[in-house]
Amino acid sequence: MSKRITIDTNGNEKQKQCARAWSANDAISDIVYGGSKGSGKSYIGNSLIFSDALTYPKTHYFIARKELNDLRKFTIPSIYEVFEHWGISTDYFTYNGQDNYFNFYNDSKVFLTAAKYMPSDPKYARFGSMQMTRGWIEEAGEFENDSDANLSISVGRWKNDVYGLEPKVLRTCNPAKNYLYSKYYKPHMKGELEPHKMFIQALPEDNKMLPKGYIEQLHRTLSANEKERLLYGNWEYDDDPTALCDYDDILQIFKNSHIVQGQDKYLTADIARFGSDKAIIAVWDGWTVIDRTVFDKSSTTQIQECINSKRQQYQIPSDNCIADDDGVGGGVVDNCGIIGFVNNSRPLEQLNENGETHVPNYENLKAQCQYYLANKINQNQLWYKVEINDSVKDGIVEELEQLKRFDTDKSKKLRTLPKAKIKEKIGRSPDEMDTLTFRSYFDLRPKKTISTETFFAVTI
Image (cartoon, rainbow, N blue to C red; front, side):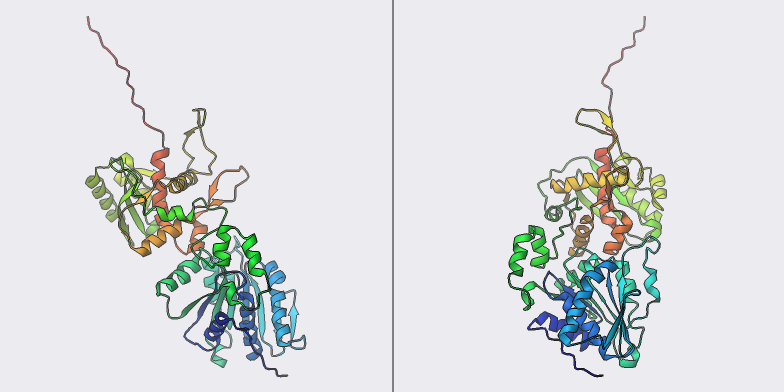
């Protein structure tokens, strides 16, 4: 039972580039193909996975999406479209709908894998036991860094040595501000992408098989931000409706030189949690960052010495200095005699429109401060004046884009995206954002009042 398979891209040069990287370039192991709707992502993904499965007996592959239902509703019809073009009938395969895999006449298998987050498996350890030849992550823009990483280490473990097949993972996606942006798109644009990776920008115009009028329909129906991402393939836009900050306003924080200086000085510090994250110390003139010190690995003694030195240099009183009070930060707070920021503490009281004191409807102090920070950014009232390189700047922008509303709890409290979720999305702790968040505390804390009443003591 033999058949010749031809992957006809119908003039789509981007699909050809992807196919060559998959089949003819052993130096490439990680491929990102994406950029827009209608660029032929599903067709090339199915073509590469199933041509391998039909060619190499007893090999194993995965096709992963966040939801199994999406695989059934959207991916399987695309699979059968490819089979139809190749003339592949059910004589060549069976589909197991209970365990969700295709089994071919040559005993190769393609598994449909759900990769959604599970509280019982927060690190996606369930993928650790998979033994795959190669794999495809579809709609990778919806994935977290950990799920991608654990799926990726499952390839190269099944019959690769028999056929001399390099382990490869294909990721197809629309533009997304997650690990794809920082690990693939941004290095690609700078010419710094690692040799084993390939990024292929694909647009609707590359796909010669689009139905007539499809692109015009996208123009009519997509919002301005959606057009940037899904039509023009612009990775710099994020149309997430939960975002608290406008992207252009985030970029503006490095240009807001109109902000008046000569105001009160403050110091904020995000302390490395048990030495695992960076320690960042920022000095502020009002809402202008004028000094920044970073410790990649540091002792509490080094951090304390730096805080005390900056306080003396800029004449900052202790009650204008704040550091996170979690982990090792608590010792720094105590030893330096400064304010401790407790993320989950009660929100600070504020005045309502009637001038009455009330506790605002935030989940905790951190959410309150992050909403306030987002408002400052959107009002162009934060200036990051201190000189930093482009890599640091990109990191700050990426973290501030994670200032987002999060699902409200039963009490309808205003919440922000938890740090654990941000780590999953961007692959690191948002230390820069935390340092900026702490500055909000000084605007929100109760103002000191000084009595102007005069007392006279009369002695007769």
